[in-house]
Length: 288
Image (cartoon, rainbow, N blue to C red; front, side, top):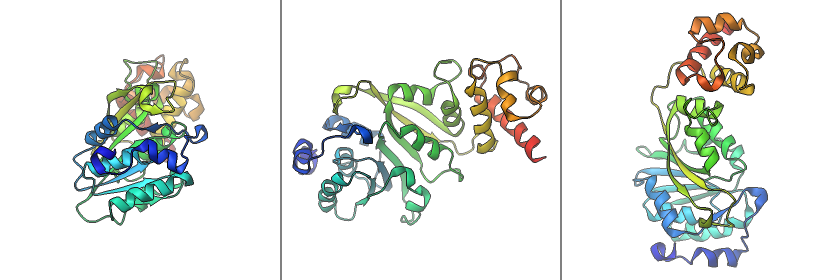
């Protein structure tokens, strides 16, 4: 990133601070300046945006986001080795980089950005650690308040995970609970793929950058019950719904009939509209 921000090249930063990527932390560092800039531009414009970045490592994407004009970046990093390198970036961009030395899974994200200045928006942009990527995404998709605290997410995943996020019943092998939640609450699409060669160390798989834009008004249903229905249906995805939904401990035949869903259908054959209808009916049964 030195060509854009006059900071030392990332490879020098990694050498200076001894930042060999740790497999246990799901780390794969991005050194490709064209790629970090492309991701930052995909998240833009950023002039009035507070960006939350997870797992910045030595700060390659962090620097790109700041160079592209992000009003503020909140970088959440649990690897203590990376903090000193990020502090160098913070000094170069006074008042624009906040470093949070914590586990991303333990953060209260709405509270983290609750003090932001009026008129600023929040965006999550990250090369997510692969070992916690889907857990983090699930938390952001299932947050209680909706519309959520963020206005967009630009996230990198292993390509097979990205395909599961954007899948529809037309891609039955990839369509599952994650796709139902993502499709229900957001408009999700894959922006571009990233070669393993862009990372250090290179992973064994291709990665993909995914954009998720919150829907202002998702199909009416309660997240809790939608998750229960999707989990039950896809938990035994080879079985017909009349069998897989028995774990819900309700009159499955009546549930499916009232929603107009064929009892012989399988989970990967029904739409998000159908899942939302089943969730509403399940809630009516449980709370009635």
